Length: 85
Image 1: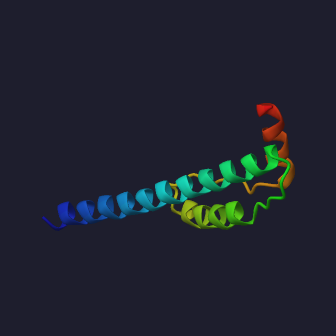
Image 2: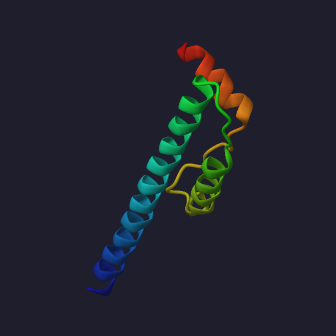
């Protein structure tokens, strides 16, 4: 029985980790979209919030279950925004 409980706890822990990743990834995408909209409007923007969330995601990625994400540069946002025009 203890093996079953151990497996259940492990699955719960992985699910919690994955749910945290999902939330952070959604935040990251929101910040990227905000930066892109500012860039398209010709307004000043930063990638600071994007990369703060990215760093949190990358800490989680040490657990194998979670994929890592690249840090975002202003040039990356500008290049993407240009493709939307």
